[in-house]
Length: 160
Image (cartoon, rainbow, N blue to C red; front, top):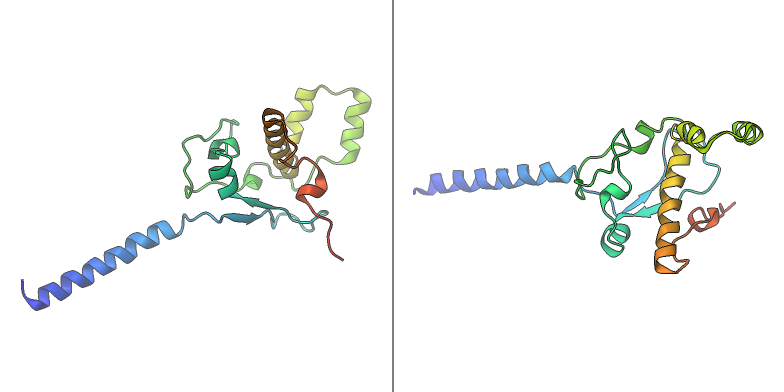
């Protein structure tokens, strides 16, 4: 092989390595995610953070425990780095169900299943339902109180 051909081959190999690297660069998952969403004009509580590594590697929680399809079926085939939709893309209403609606439910003794249908539309309701439900199950299974279940454990008081 001539010197010129070797240089061309080396340049092609380097270019391919950069191209392959850029394919995977877009799928990197941030370890610490600040749960801040532009759909909210303001946040009533401080922004909480979520750590993929801690939940996935330390606690052995699979992606499908949090991520699901439009029918609510867990996406168990997901791997770290796969593209996923943001929760707000399906749970489109920022915040929680308004207090007036909750009072109405209480007065009418609205069945849980009916409330759940409405709650699914609200982004914060689903985030809280998912996280707190998992934390309760974890604490019960492990006879601990390590996984936070109260507002201020996940949303520390805002500093004025």
